[in-house]
Image (cartoon, rainbow, N blue to C red; front, side, top):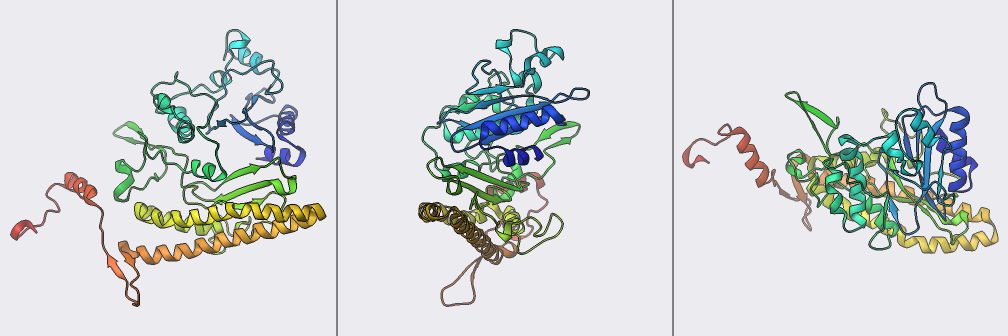
Length: 423
């Protein structure tokens, strides 16, 4: 974190950020077992992987590669860079001892041209494939056809069938496409988390931690999806080279589980942050009813109790807000650009006010949504309003036929009704 914050303060673009970060670790060391970084600016996107050299060796080994225009890359807590060009400074940087250090430690033997960063420094195992690479596979599978040929790799069954570092999407992706690409529980694939016993009677894709567990001495696991309940925040960074920096950068920011969050526009030149999203508005042990983090957690955690029903009420509001903000962007950009041409500070003030208003609107609408959900689904019932009456229509749909069948299979005659007709 510190390295990224300093890079943002000192660097004007991705290439400079790479130099800042790698110089810092060279000068001061790097106490980490490894990290992957996404770096973007209005013109380029890079992926960098860095691993500390360990006790007694100052600094780190690292590789950074530029992602080609028109391609999609991804990383999820596992090194992904394999072979890389040794003589292409326009598209690849690496530490001067990245290969020699691996040889000295016995991690690699062979010709330099055959060197693979992740195979030397972070060899793949089942856990890395199923819990990390599977998420990248799912992202690629959403945007590019033909990814089923890597399903055995994502499942950890064929670790030699490695995916590429990047793929070409079938179509150009919009901001909204990227938002939705980050919302995933493997639906529609062999790893679909809504279909197994762990999903319960309401097809809930969330699995409580720990990730692995033992039964009679054998280790089992839950899937680890892109969307997960313990997400603190996520964002989509939009950098537009056709506009001045004051106007061109937007962080579409959301808190909590990205499947049920709302990505609100926060222009990168603003001088304040929305109060509902501000640090210090509550904390992990202090609930605040003016904090977006807590309100979004109220909605998502309540939804986990009856997911397949509540998600149908959540997603339309989510879509309404996000597509509304996206639709407004053109007009906001235009107004900000006109102000920028008069005085850049006026543009900053305008975009600050817009971002604050959007954040407040998101918070207020989500708080309203929580009240609606709680009223509708309280006590396991589903209540629908009746026009002209204060008394709602109440249904009690129970758990669903499949769940009842499994219950009877597990309990046998225990709950079978006794008496006439067996009713």
